[in-house]
Amino acid sequence: MSWLLILPILIPFCTAIPAFFAGGNAQLSARISLAGSAIGLVAALVLFCQVHDQGVIAGQMSGWAAPFGITLVADMLSAIMVVITAITGLAVAIYALGEIDDNQSELGYHALFQILLAGVTGAFLTGDLFNLYVWFEVMLIASFGLLIMGGRAEQIDGAVKYVALNLVSTILFVSGVGLLYGETGTLNMADLSRAVAEHPDQGMMVLISLLFMIAFGVKSAVFPLFFWLPASYHTPSFAVSAVFAGLLTKVGVYALIRSFTLIFTSDPGITHTILLWVAGFTMVTGVLGAAAQSDFRKVLSFHIISQIGYMVLGLALMTPLALVGSVFYLVHHIIVKANLFLIAGISEKLTGGSNLYKIGGLYGAAPLLAALFLIPAFSLAGFPPLSGFWAKYILVKASLDTQAWLIAGTALVVGLFTIFSMTKIWAEAFWKEHPDEITPEPPMDGTALWPRYAAVIFLALLTVAIGLVPQPFLELAETASAQLLDPSAYIAAVLGEPVEAAQ
Image 1 (cartoon, rainbow, N blue to C red):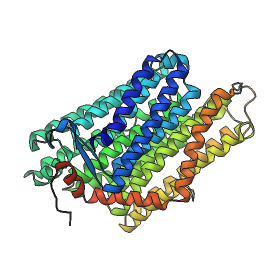
Image 2: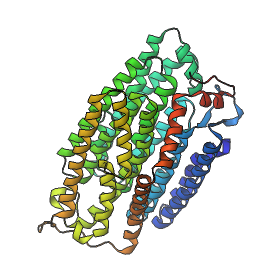
Image 3: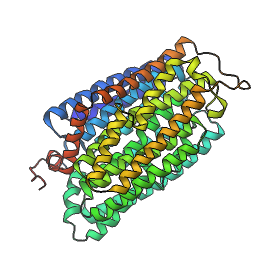
Image 4: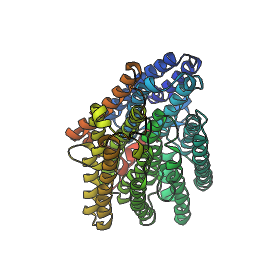
């Protein structure tokens, strides 16, 4: 079991080494990264199958028993997130074959990309809070390197804001870890589940939980802590933007879900009410920001914020159906958002820019790209029968079931504004003629073109598959939701002792 848990983390690290030393040869380095990503997906699928067949599995690194050693643990939510990380990594690795040039490769793009995947995967599989902090730092270091690659003033400006706010988050996170360890004597999540619930000073536990909420809120880019995201995500290469958009904020959402279903559950009247208001404001401010933008990637960046609100909404409602919606939304959004950023990259290459008012003509010049854009755009807006429709439907129904009329109405109105933003991109970039005074880029050759289209088609097919055949994915989300609401199997797997199921 330990090997099954460690391989999805170990493979990207092992891939990063030869990819770095082959950096002078961009194509060789890219192919090494692609091969490592494909092998990583196989390892992730093997782990997922094991969790699906046997339930929660845990491994104690170096044989140190929990809660004293380093624990890796995979329940259904972790396994799903590891698989979707590997899928996104593979798609972006394919896309990078056509985008990442010799200079970026020599600077270590492919090695940093693999280290980023390892950090994301480690965060999903870790069983204790200190090592969650470690994986966050691995992600931060790798993402900073990818963000500044190229050295343009715009990139440096975005990277400074990105790192500054994430360091604030790190300080809050470490402070919360220190306080929690001082109060409970443990940082193992399964052990904390009991230690926090049994602590005599529940007021202190609520205060500590708010520290974690803010720290993970910065990582998730929720209201009002999201300013770093639209300031930075439009600046790097499109392959980097895509993996950032698909994965980084979802690690923060995962940390919120894990913490407030496993550890901090004693006073949901405070914590989950705050999360509910945060979810609503995140949806609204994100979609209004998107509507005000004129740059392709800036529109998409603000939509990340808006969609994070939907994921947090499921956690805030804390019902079985709502958590199903959060898990389903995570999977749907990672695929769709990464794909939209990849499409934005092809668009910029074909038109010569990303300012929607200075480009156009893509419908006539690249009809396949136009069709491929409509799939994730319609899914993001919630059009049936694509994956986004089911995700939003579940969350709105969960809101109505709990008589949370205001948040249900907010979710529906935000969906309408999402349609407006996607329509603006379609009208400006695809439908209208390309402005005469702007000279578009020359057509891409086949070597640069096919990997980009291959990655986009791959993710588009996944979106359509989830939308047309949602039942298997809903069943997996239901299993994940049940395990989150009743963590007894998680605790038993980690601590190696039976635990009574929640009543």
